[in-house]
Length: 367
Ligand code: MSS
Image (cartoon, rainbow, N blue to C red):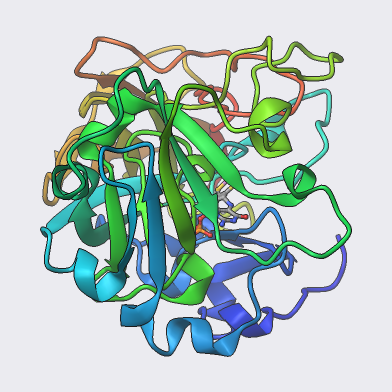
């Protein structure tokens, strides 16, 4: 590959040694940098922007005065963050995972960032439940089908806003657990992660959690923005995506091993602690199995550390006695809904939502 790129200014506070800088808008967490503490430290959390983030330095200086417009409700109005803070409070531990995480393993080499495992993290967002906001505005207008969020990036003049605007619609059922967040892991939400205010849609892929949200509306139709209509769709390989293909929304069950996973490292023969993370998607991770022979035999592994609820991931460990040689380590999670992580990825043109256990396997040298 090419020489390591520096962190962009807006994310210069990230721990450089823990990150892979693909571009100024796409920064991945190294597989060996997740730790075993369940929560991903904010300075190691991945960053993904579809367009350059806002450069207005004042934006996060006075977070309380950022305003959110709310429409598609009985009493449309706008709220400052200070006003939102009076309506309710919830803390949501959850996996934030880019739709394209795992794209690097699609054999047809889809365009887009070649993420392996690091476009994901487990963090705690704090803010006001969308439900509490809805109560304050008299509920949504009758017949609404989608919850639509608009990002606060300035739209350059002379361009069709729909080609640039970061605006996503999700089914209104996703509203149940959604929050408007101003804090991440107990700290003010930095611009890189959507400060001053961001919507969080737990269980859904990252693109649906719109940063620097400036407009929340309940709508009958999905957003006309390109990012909704023709991007983030389950289109077949080789086929241009369109609104006729299903939208990329809910996350599936998934897991991967983080330790050992360094291809440069040789592990000492004998007792080895194999550890990683498991998530359930829309329901909690229920169990996790590990294979030390490339998926031929599976044994139950143990969850360790705190259980932070259905949208968070779990840490797991498996003790194995490994003899000298190369071992293919794999893991496979099952969620509360009874879905088990599949061996094969679900093929799609842009390489979204890879949860194949085989793709996430690691070959470890033992000596
Ligand atoms: N938001 C806005 N406003 N803008 C942009 O660009 N992106 C997406 C989300 N949101 C955006 C938004 C994506 S796409 C993702 S993943 C996420 O975000 C990420 O996050 P962080 O915080 O990590 O950066 Mo894929 O599905």
